[in-house]
Image (cartoon, rainbow, N blue to C red; front, side, top):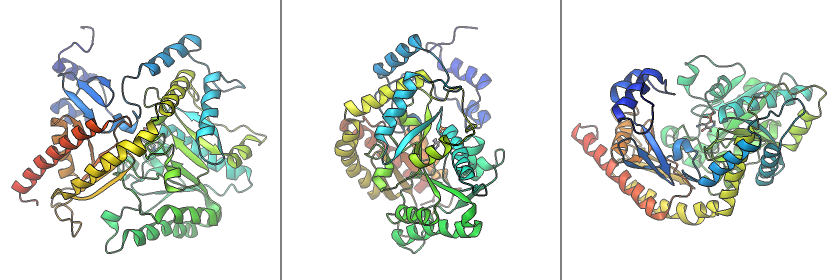
Length: 462
Ligand code: PMP
């Protein structure tokens, strides 16, 4: 076999991929027929594929490349750490400097008394950690029957058995079952489900489903509630302003632990280090991953408040949980360097003061497009709801997602990566995006919307 490098023709790379590589969340047979896109390099917000196309990445990979592609400092940090100590574990009464330094830095950055970090290699693993943390906490507190975790329909918390069970995606539950003790309540998705209510009324209604669920299950059986500040994979659904204060009030009232999944929203995405600050939420545990290393190394974790960490840490027995790569020294060193870049380059100020205001003006203008019913943008995560009728918030007379998929295909052809969730188009670009690059993104998005609209009209779906 030829050596497999970037220099092979696209068709050959595609054939090898189809023959041997199973893709996540994909029908491999259908992909093989269509031909996979091969990405060969990245710089800033730009990707290059095997055909030489320059693509603007409106999704920062999978919402993770916060500092942009190709940062040499991160490569140097990895190489330095590999030479010094390529691996050691943090089990059995040992530690190492990268894990110590990263945990201390996260404690400094995280709000309130979130001062303790349990490391994992991904967001899914971190949420699996959270299930054990909260159940263990109540066990030690003498309330072992507090095991139920309440989450939301259309929430996303990963695709391990634990993370997938916390998530409210029926297709993931169908992919191999769901663990016990997880309950789901409705999501604060006003556009799709708010009917005649105002967004604020609907936000309260959906938050109060938490109280109803607590009473249904029994307050003495509920361990925790988990939610994303803004549902990401569910379609960048920004909750009405009334939602989180009411969730907080209910968690406080019943003394249940609040886990906020900041895997997407952490590390500057919403214009603050954490979206908990943007929304005024006070969690007991924050889930982190993605932007923690800007995707340069697989790393995630749980940032835990003093109370929970002390109760678990001061018990006589071990907390029986951990991963070979918990606090991996190379991943930790890269994450630490990534946090330095975010801080010293003023990337969060750039999001708040430059990129968000500039994008917001143009993004909300897309609401004038005949097919766009709602525009949402917090920091640098945004969505466009496609609809055939803005006034009635109607759905297309086609299988949900058909028009979103088509629009995404046009984006692909126009060298813009924008995702769709059913008939919502979503973006989450690298946080370093410049105003000139925002112009390119908006230009290509407009062109793609226009092309999809022309087709929809021609087919009588509008
Ligand atoms: N939580 C949230 C909110 C996420 O968006 C994701 C990934 N998209 C995860 C957890 C899972 O993270 P990972 O894919 O790193 O396991």
